Length: 108
Image (cartoon, rainbow, N blue to C red; front, side):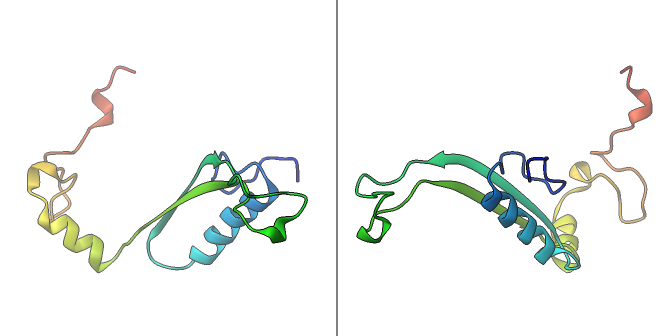
């Protein structure tokens, strides 16, 4: 468990955080849409939390998590059709549109 996890989540350093990220990606697998998980900064526990006696109340230290699900299918198609051609990568016919970027013209 000391090796990096193959599932995205660079700051998921604890077993619990890696397990949460892994479970979220496994749950999303096979469904429409893309999942993005961001493991944020560490939040300190409340002053009333006592690690020696957690039953007394208070909030333990934790990490913040941000989840984003980018829907595909009909929702994505509707979002694209609202964009003007100048902001699209491809036209409805599949030709390059205004926001298309040709990588062959780059010098790097």
